[in-house]
Image (cartoon, rainbow, N blue to C red; front, side, top):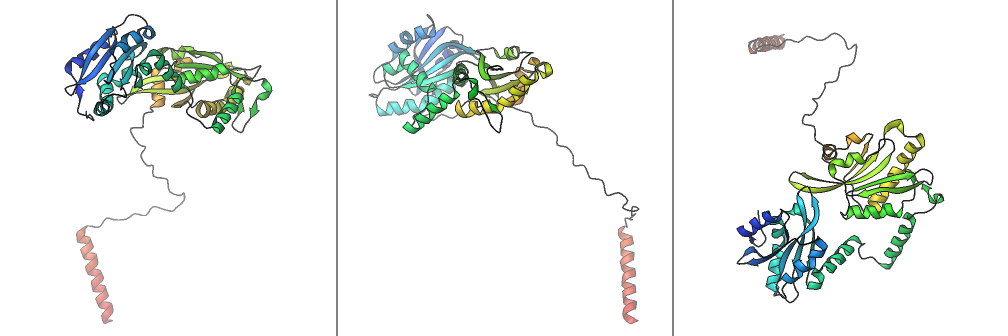
Length: 362
């Protein structure tokens, strides 16, 4: 493992990292001392993560002294509790100190384990590092980036087009039929993009011809299949968290479930026609990257193994051998050739030389 500054975690800090994953430690303050990452202070869990934040983080921040803080959240994934990584670098700190801590930031996250870190925040003052500052950080990250006046006006118009409207606002395109999407459905897609939920189910109101939100929640991954109805078509968006070749990945999968011919013809046609415009909205408007688009007809198909194989399909281990094509019919009798030995070939050449010599004297 290479490090930009050559600084690594001390043995005591590594042991503390292992102990922290048990869930009893709320925060760990980390500093650089004698070219080693060491722990200055730790705090135990007292209450919920939002109530513990200010009382376990702010007292350990010292003016003009950079540091790192690892803060344990209450959310979990398959690797255990998720953590917030805080990088504190006051403006009045010496330039050398700020540069050293900036260059060692990636090392701290690697030593602790990237799979355990859900979010990170950088700040130069206690106000920025407070819980209110973290809420501002979440709000800014969820919002759109800086835009010009023209871009803001175009975004506003697009937002109004996507909002909930009566039936006569639908329009047909070459790809299919684009029905209005409810505001709740669009908001849930943003929540999925930001990691606040991991599952969304959408349905089509056949009477009003609109796309509505059926469910938005955090669902255990082994139970994704239970959310798929057996008697109605649905659209699903789910965040499949897994590891592949040593990397921890969050992959958004679009699932289109159609339970065969148990659905009415109109329902099957509308869900099929609305799929492409809905995908355009998800990818272009909501900016939700889709790792895979899958169609299933049974809840039993939706397993973790199935999703993994869809996202990372296995390549064929053996290629098909080239099959020699048959020759044209009625091409005549097969010619029989004889393989001559080297002795026979010498006799043939000697006879040809004698014949040629006689011709010259004739």
